Image (cartoon, rainbow, N blue to C red; front, top):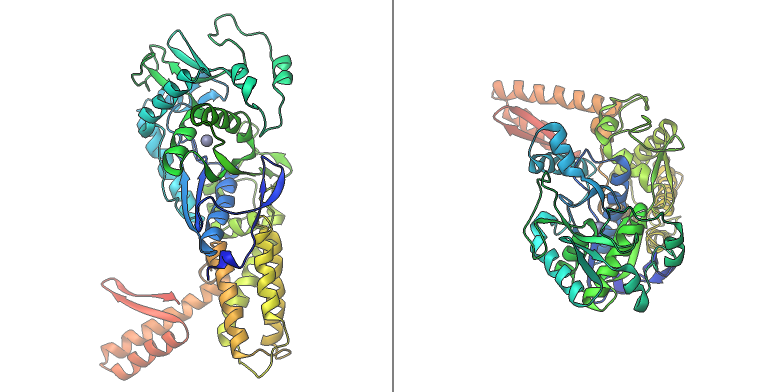
Length: 494
Ligand SMILES: [Zn+2]
């Protein structure tokens, strides 16, 4: 029996604004699409929080036994400076400023994004498609929407006709915006605009002569509108109706609203069953912004090279910190909050590590079964990681009593405690036990192991293989594995 048959998962759906029982379209399989980064600059910590929120979702769904196809795109064309179809393409602009090819910009920041996600120990998605790799699919959707009568061409560009669409569909249902209010609140269209109404959005834009990123199409040499790529790639890999679509809260409008309109206009069905939105990250109570200096990049956080925090923080500590807030709440980044999280993180890791040295007994004075289910209950309640972490701290208290000889545990319960801690810490949250190598105790440990490696080398030089083997075997028993390589001996913790 799969875990998902035993656990009832509720997910907050931004569309219905309610927590709903999750049941995928195809039994046992989940299709999930998350809007990925626009690769024109280093990934922001706020974006990282979004991607780490969906890493938790991805990991938990997999842990429950679902076969998950997770698609997260790379936006490498079409995203203009102004989200509403105006200004220069973000990637082309960066390429112009740095005098390099747009695809060099894309390559540089895609690598940066992957490096940072890797440092956070986030799992890669199942498919990571690019906008430029799906121009043909995007052109096909534009043709479809034109033939359905929900778009019009003007001077080589194609626009989505929002008012026409709203006559027989509900535009604004995700963001809760009323089209009438939107119309009333927009300034008069600039005379040179080709749009019939300011709410209309570009499906295809004719490229100006200086625009480098351009593709041929039936309407002009140009490029696709930003919203279109996600409709093209999500439906291509997940079908015209799939389970989960996620992204940052700021994408709800206009991006996701436009995705719904495009998909409904071309496929005659609602594309997504569950819309999920991750909330933003603030820094010292204020919005993070490059322009004000109230900003910190992931690498500056990991290296300590910044004016905001007192020391470097490990990526997994930062990840743990983020999971101490629910993904739908705003989270504030500050030195004191991170330091508190780091202490908690080490406490959890110490407790987990010490389980291997616990003596078993005839009885247990802790309800392990109930505690284990409460960990699942937390995650089943819309991925409530802060409650899960609180449960893990409950177990830590009990483990400390065990260590002090003030409580007992049976062999079976110890096994359950160990495997449950392991599952939630490492599999579901994707944490890594960095405390051993990163903190002071870790340094002492590594010094001690180096001394033993040196003693073993001496024994081997003296052909005293009994002693050298004994050192290796006893270290292995203690969970420290020596590896002999051509550059000497290294060790790893099992
Ligand atoms: Zn998107």
